[in-house]
Amino acid sequence: MAALTAALFAAPAFAALPEDGGINFQPAATRIAERVHEFHIVLLWIITAITALVTVLLVWVMIRYSQRANKTPRKFSHNTTVEVIWTVVPALILVGIASLSFPNLYYQNVTPNLGEIAATSKKLLAENRTAEHLAYTKNYSPDAAEKGFVNVKVQGNQWNWTYTYPDLMDEGGNVIEFVSNGIHKGRPSDKANYEASTGRTDFDSQPVNYAVDYPMVVPAGRYIRYYTAAADVIHSWTVPAFAVKTDAVPGRLNEGWFLVDEPGVYYGQCSEICGIDHAYMPIEVRVVPQAQYDRWAELMKAGDFEGAFASILTVASLDAETQLASNN
Ligand SMILES: [Cu+2]
Image (cartoon, rainbow, N blue to C red; front, top):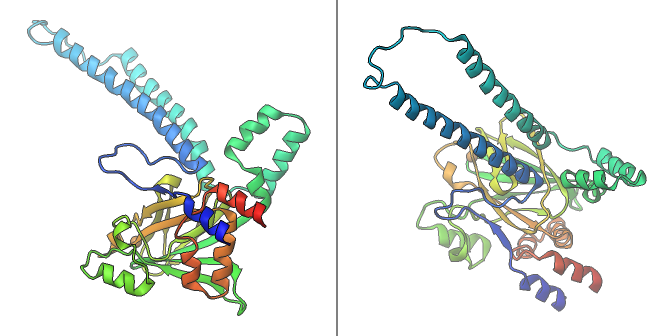
């Protein structure tokens, strides 16, 4: 246990947060985010080329066809060739953009079929199609697919989130469920309230308007399937590092998925204006190694709420998990 504790506490947790003055995306933590970033770079080149071309054309027209250089202007209002070009070329550019965009949208929006992933991977390996298998595993994780989904229901409330784990049931048959409150509410009493309700003394080191009292906890390297719902008004569950943003709408369930390999703390905020405390319902996701997640789940099932969250306040590295496995 001492070795485990030492291993757990030695590892610095990766934290995904916006930085002051930053203009780029937060580092991608999921394949979804990687693909969005790659697409973003392509768009950036296209828009740069278009802007440059339009600027050059503008300057050229201003100089070459100014009144001074062109005393007697020709009088015409149509040029079929030019009109065909400036209709067809932008249309082709848009088709090109769509052909890159739609596969990403589909990848992000359709929860993967894990049985199919495992089967496809086995098939490619059995047929010795190694290169194809490598390309396939860039987008799909057969190892994680074998283990099935971790399911979490995310409910938006005015103004906090409720996380429900339908797979985790205590002895009484109740599913694990808890409310996650932002620790900053823009009030002078925030620190005292936090310390009184959680018994923790780390308020000053927590990122302002991002930290919560009880974060969502999920295992690293697993397919997470989440459902969003809302109790009152529309909220939106958003984690930029995952490139995930799903509206939480009263009366319906929306579905999304993500898979994070790197353990760490990932922050987001409600992204649908939902009332006076909209700015104070942040999202904190602690992605921890499987062993640490299992321990958290056991403590939650046993009803040791504070003990469970104390066990994930420091996120273990994957090395620590390996060490844990070898100790067992
Ligand atoms: Cu909200």
